Image (cartoon, rainbow, N blue to C red; front, side, top):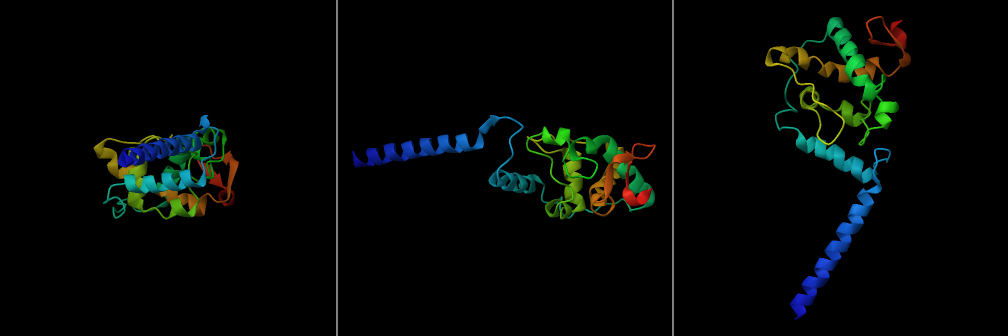
Length: 179
């Protein structure tokens, strides 16, 4: 009888705990307008790390950095990524505000610390349960795709002073110093 009471109390505590946890997670319903809590942001960042294959961190970028690669990366970013991440990589724009979870600030330390291999894997495969689509390409274009990793790395030095309203004739964002 005593064991049965302990099990019943344990189940009741578990159910109440799960209900409180669900209420906390769903604090604003399932609205994309909600701001993730620090715990949610922490869990999401760590889940991203756990979702990457073990070999991704050590994968090398076979594309050598050059002006042409940087130019193509900026064009690609302006055409395909800036809609959510913003011209400056902050994610602070109307589309970024409408996503949940919000796009990460690509200028932030935790993003800048990702290796080329990790960036490639994220861009190539996307991130489940977020607005980040995959940008998978045919195997013959894989080397070209790996050059897109540089677009994230380029945000730190080349995009920190971006004028959000300024783009060159090819749609590529220009930094203030590039005029």
